[in-house]
Length: 331
Image (cartoon, rainbow, N blue to C red; front, side):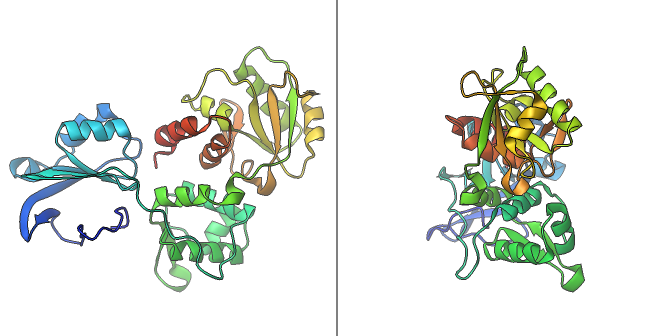
């Protein structure tokens, strides 16, 4: 089980029936309840009740919740109800007949790149962002097409991620497909790569608008008419998901690397200024934000993973990024 850090006193092995053994004797058996990403406390009764098989309710099996990301309030609620859990961050809670096992610390990070492997570039960052959004198994050719990278780049990156045990390969030859083995671990790994959060050239401008929502729509409309690829990111984008601050003094927007920032400002009819600026135009190196953007209420947004990474670089952005990851990404 890759979700659990290695410990000399804890052994995990595959079995047809989930159980807990202590000093050679079985002390509990479990019914595994799979939790969806973003599970909320108010959803626990449904998960623990209607979703539990009838056979489990008649037996002495204990419910055990397994999910990619269990939020702190959900874990606390499960502990209060005496329900065990495990998530991909390495949080583990087991309580059964005289045995209490609780691990709060996050699991050990994945191994870094193996010797001889090239570092991740900005195009690789974009490719990993695309991979994190994909739910279905991917062939190399499809992955390359979706991420807009060469077949060689796609194959090299997937091989690297396999070596890091973040991606799993199934099949052979043309039928070979890759799936994410550890989505949480892959995002953790990506945010540790320097190119993922590199500082880019930027330009502060002011554009009149009465409300942030008006600013976002006006900006996206004007850039769209000019044919300029763009995407809002950072705290402004978080707010558009309904989980961020209602007041955003400066909204960040990534601009296609093919368009000079001053030219984009002219298309916006915005004033270049450091004082009173409400927009930060960012040179989108590698198209990590403007590629695979989505529209929300007429405003183009960067991919959610990119929004998360950009929020982390903002001043006092760690808490907001963590909240966005829990509520929107869910892993």
